[in-house]
Length: 377
Image 1: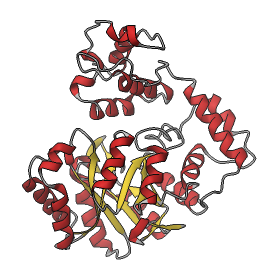
Image 2 (image 1 turned 60 degrees about the horizontal axis):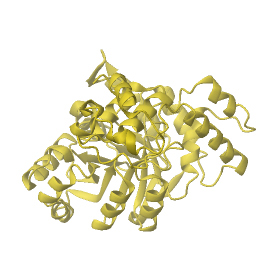
Image 3 (image 1 turned 90 degrees about the vertical axis):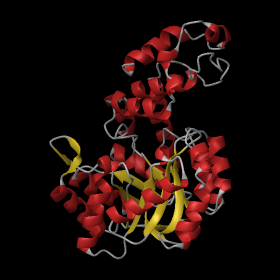
């Protein structure tokens, strides 16, 4: 296993982290974790050098923290780092922050959480967190020894990401990133900035919920041209590990084979390993995926603001992603979680004002109907 220092914390973390949101389950019920299978998976990962587990209050409908609390205590693991996240969308006052932290400490059967993250910090939730005095809460939790390090996970725009990084002396950040997401949300620029400020950088969704693992035949043909043969998963992970600004990649794994494979890939995930030809091949794959775009929206914003509040570029972005990766289920979750109610396509009243302003001459009214149909609005 290879290790990197997590920003200014100096903590040596495995370049592969275990995301605890996709454990195998029983009878298709999210909260019913298959404990025997999950223990085998965790044991193999930890025995082979993985030393960082990441969970959250809502993972497996709350069962993930309960399971990890029992597992870590029964195994008596001393050199494993654990992060969890506070549900920022449920915070309205300071007491909420204190209550959730105490509940999570109890579920995890510990007096101290190594890395405590604000979950999905975005512009929608930020005013409530600010009102609840989130920074004083984090300072108090650190002083009381209930947490060792602070951080936040992020799904919003780059500009807001930069603001948040500068608002508090965070220890780490967690962002969505893959070779398809270099200019999405915080993206490559946000990662570079966070790293320059001494923050540990963790990446989530390196495979876009599995969309970059099971790829179409026409794209696999491109990978087959490489002199060094890699699976689509290894290509995706190595592209991220190639970036020295990234310290750790969290993979949500559901089978023992996935753990075996990812651990093997992490044994050789050195930074700046890909050749110029291999990097060009990644660009080829990226362009092949982009050829699947359904609406040629450039997100220029000329159609905005919509009088009804519809976020037209974001609606098209999620619609395109669903088609690019043939993954409506995963993208539907993003569509309903990341967009406010009024921002979704079903609020369009077909006034047509946006079409008069669109430099791409997109038939926005008709395309928004397709968005609604795709996501069953």
